[in-house]
Length: 84
Image 1 (cartoon, rainbow, N blue to C red):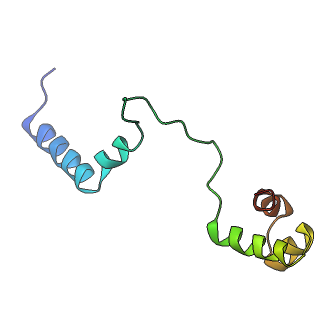
Image 2 (cartoon, rainbow, N blue to C red):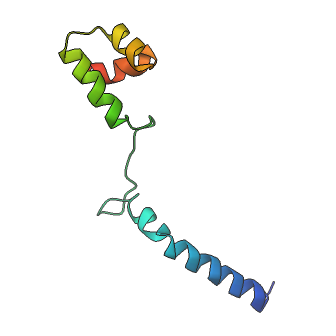
Image 3 (cartoon, one colour):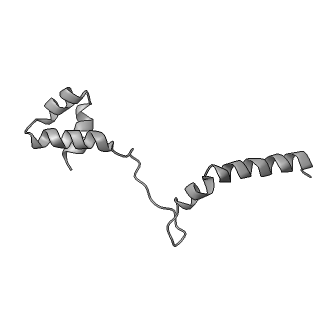
């Protein structure tokens, strides 16, 4: 099946937009220098601001439950930061 010139030009335009948006760089970041896929944690990355505040409250002597209540975070979220 032959692709029409219009479809080819449309595909080229989409690829160019992808490259301009940094898509190729994002793909390269997924692989290490040997070409293997970088393994990532399945979990979401921790919120650095929440981490700082939770650890500051811990240093002040607050309990995890007190920190959770004070910050409006789930206790399970506070515990993620607390164990660091």
